[in-house]
Image (cartoon, rainbow over all chains, first blue to last red; front, side):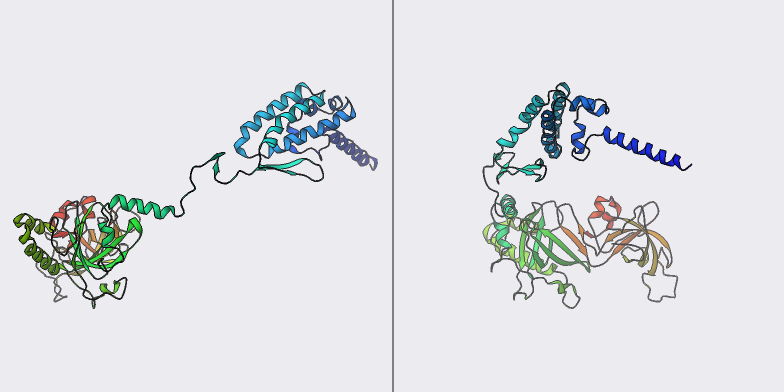
Length: 316
Length: 130
């Protein structure tokens, strides 16, 4: 009873030893390199000697040949997976056919692997200090190149600003709208009463300007008015093509000391409807325009001030 | 942003003055201009004497549950061209189950989004739209 487990143990030991024999040098060979071993060596321990037998030096040569070429292959980026696979297949073929002639196979595989290493100027290799094999490799390309070609121009310093300028030039070729909302003395300021005319019909919307939001092409104004006892606020993009025109109905007599007049929403400060102001302005325009060209511009002014000239309102 | 318990002004002549949102029909988020909601009438119009139930033109009474269409919101609504509209109050117009307005007149501005949502009857009744 006591001897039986001992025997069992012995058997186990034997089995382990066999297994160790089965897998030659698992410590030195990495996993990817194992996959590239010739099929004969993977088959079993019996074929193992066939590989090892030829001679001491040849087997020595053989081992680095595997490890040098296979390890960098396995760690290359995914982009060249196809190429590396193809290479591996070739190598496998070579190894299969020339399993006994290890020296020639090593020479061949070296030729396959070395050209990219030598040719690339910025190619770096990381070599393991102990085993002297390539652990990893990478290439550094010079700046300003994409896929090896040198681009014509460096990118602009402020691309977004340039884009906005381009777009504004496209949407406002005359520069009138830009000038109207620039940070100048003549430009619109919060507190002025404006009227925005749509290209898509509808009544023009007039109101006191509460805020100017300057964001390049997205520059917009907030107008507030009362329509039938209800306060209505509207944002308009000034570079919008649907905005046919923006007129200054009335200037604020004194510059507002705030950039955003949101306090005008409170009942205490609310201006109420600007209808009367617009009406008076239209009337004054009609007076002015009749001196220049009679009924035509008068009717235009009546429509919502589309075609009038010599008035204080700016036409866009 | 009309949701449960939001109080809205009723701007038609159906007899309701103030209504409370009880449900949003057909969607799981808050209602905006042109959306259909279910409301409870909280205050009747012409409530000089509140105890008097017999106001002549009132088609709805306090406590009635009706459908309505939102026509104005305090929440800014953005349009396709980048312009944004915001009203100072939330308002609605009462409708029946089939979508016809209960009142015959609307006094007050309504949003243009109603056109997109195909409330042409309400739009034609409204004195102005913004």
